[in-house]
Length: 306
Image 1: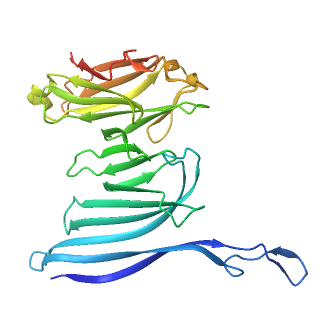
Image 2: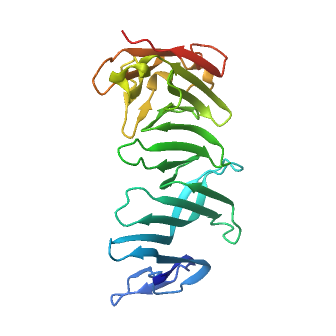
Image 3: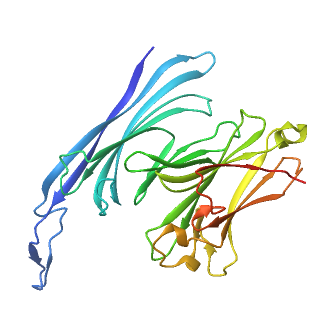
């Protein structure tokens, strides 16, 4: 049985208006209301939204569902090819498959971006299998929701669709005032290798990053079958602050222009089992913009809790 209960059409329109003045009864002049006077469509686009029941069993109440949703957003971003910020309209087509009573879903988000100064041309396309996709100034972030108590999986890309960093639970952003530099920190667990907790990532962009594999015998213990890890950035400078949304602001690095001037901050990794076997911290100093001051992009550390 296949049904299509409803279909809706979403429309996006760029309007142009002239500065025609109207006078009130007292002769006072003001700009006309663009919703009423001299409205001109410069560009318009539309998309379809739908809801489908794919299969179902009325006796058990279990149904497979598919939805397609079209939405529009206006964003102010700098594309990968053009570093200048300008306005784009983003056409989101979100396709989801799930079932009644299911916690997990399959979702694809397809985004087509067009610049306001050339709306007929698609400037670039983003297509990701994820549950949420957020467009930021020079990057975009995807989120896959964790099922059944698992952590969310996050990933940040540039607008060339190249991955910058990925991790579970959170991605930390290091902001440097009055500088174009920023960096990202995240940890991705490894549940397949019983001698490895996972990989800690430190990245500036898609072509400038470091991966630190953290080895440990911790997973061999029955008391630590599912470890809970945490990463923070530490600075002894009182001017450096933790902001909201896992962002740090480093005023001690104010106005620096090159990565090699990033010093006096430390990545702190800890892993505590659900039974609190250990809360020891593994410290990774950033020296001259690199973990431990080393040039190696792939590094290995051993985490040995006491």
